[in-house]
Amino acid sequence: MSKKKNEFRPDDFVVYPAHGVGKIVSIEEQEVAGMSLELFVISFEKDKMTLRVPTHKATEAGLRSLSSPDVVAHAMKTLKGKAKVKKAMWSRRAQEYEQKINSGDLIAIAEVVRDLHRADDQREQSYSERQLYEAALERLIREIAAVSGSDETSAAREIDGVLVSRAAAA
Image (tube, rainbow, N blue to C red; front, top):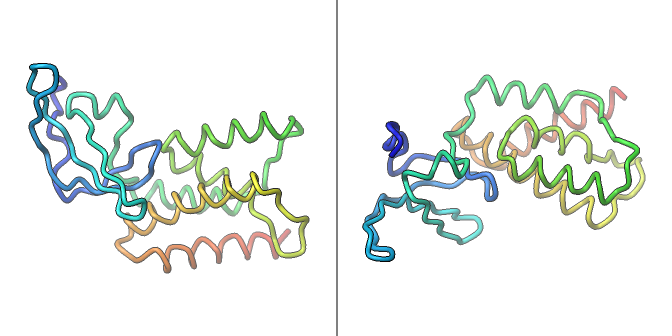
């Protein structure tokens, strides 16, 4: 058992790598294969999904607290940077973007948003590019909103402002 077993509590917002920001609604005991197991019950309201994660495996599974305001500031700075698009085949790049999104790392997610963002006058995105961009953007918006205690609309406006100003400067 990990010594930081109760590092998360009900009503805490947490980040689960594969799903983004969720809220711990409770900690419950469940019997599995004759053994009693303590589980975090995490609700992802936007996706209408509930996830149960064994408390002793939470950190191992990548469950983490929301990013600090410093990390959010770093992510916003990352968005301002110049897009880094590798010359690799799209399938390889798409795989890398997917890994970054599912890493749960806010900076990596910001890199995907930065690299896939298109200004209005740029070429059209492919369907798969747009899917990855929107998935990354949504994760970024949700976490920034949760960290700042604002709503997702404000967070989206803030991110959009950074991306638009970056595109204008390019």
